[in-house]
Image (cartoon, rainbow, N blue to C red; front, top):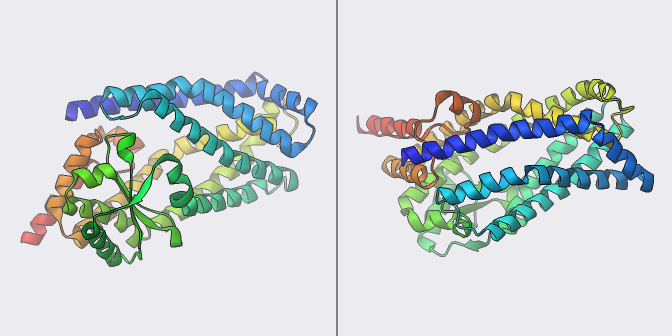
Amino acid sequence: MEDRAKAYESIHNRIFLFEILLVLAFLVLFIVSGASWRLSAYIQSYCPNIGIKIYIYVVYFALIYLIITFPLSVYGGFIVERRFGLSTQTFFRWLWDHIKAFLLGLAISLAAVEAVYFFLRASPRYWWLWGAFFWIAGGVVLARVAPKLIIPIFFKLDPVEDEGLVERLRVLAGKAGAAVKNVYSFDLSSKSRKANAAVAGLGSSKRIILSDTLIGEYSPDEIEAVLAHELGHYAGGHLMKRMIVSSVLTVCAFYAAGKVMPFLAGAAGMDSIADIASLPIFALVLFVFGLLILPLENAYSRRLETAADAFSLEVAGRPEAFISAMEKLADQNLVRREPNKVIEFILHGHPSISNRIKMAKEYMKECSD
């Protein structure tokens, strides 16, 4: 199984690298070829209204991006998943999910880009700060509405019928200080053979969500150990910590955009970054910034994930179940137990399975001493 996991990871690492190169090439060529300026001028010729022009440009830009990246999406999101026996979807069901994700992303992008370019026109000096605040606020809103509005677009949510399991999970949530009333299952088996669990939402929208594959193939003790990890994020205030870190990085990214965009726009022959033609430059700056900080983000994420594992071991008090759950998840999700250290440092937001199991065994040893 480890060999299959290694092959699976290797393919996805190559896809990730190729996707980076493809996106960079697309954005750079769209800028230096003058295609962005010509597209903006073409839209301006029949739609002088600035707000509507931005909407039209974003739709064109998104559709071009979709066409260019679609073959890679099919290969990585459908063909590879089918080859390794992870996907349970037909191509057309996968395609429908891909279309829904595109339309959802487009709707969010339209609102975000419209706001950013409004601030560019209204406050040329501090647009990056106002734009960052809007971006951050939008992220908070999305986190709050995701369980009720976004997740149901892709998955069917049903209350978990096993009252004994529900009560165990509610008691566990109480130990973490999370007042969670609703425990739902989602039909992950309709798309994949993988398993997952989460505590999703903010405030009143907060709920426990378990995949049907987890409920059907894991013991109650193992489910409790997995969920205790997710609750560890809640108890440790990890969501708030992530939001603070993400907010700081967003401000930094927008500040970098504010400094770099005028130079790149001038080099590309654009008169003003307030014109929607500068959107590929804005996207390029944010994309490169994200790549540069990715190892740091993942290092911080691994630290929080380790703390959540420790919480699971201490509160659930079931190290044997934790270990067996990690073993099952590694096999079921094709996760390498011992990935390459460099790859882990750059790309992995979770500690390796071997380190997580080692931590659980050390906990068992300490308890027995």
